[in-house]
Image (cartoon, rainbow, N blue to C red):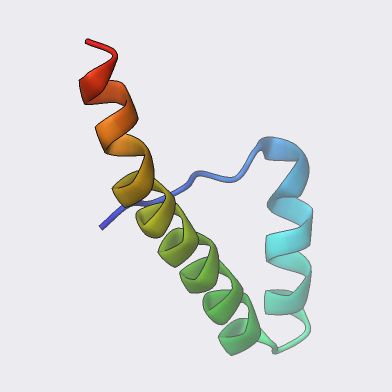
Length: 52
């Protein structure tokens, strides 16, 4: 699994919905971001290997 750490500036974006009782929405957004990172990594890996 690939996990993208949010920049400090975005912590408020992550924490505000949680404080409002929308934790599941936050989890879904983070899961979607990490899923996109995994897909990007699959496509980008050959570029890094070929450039080595």
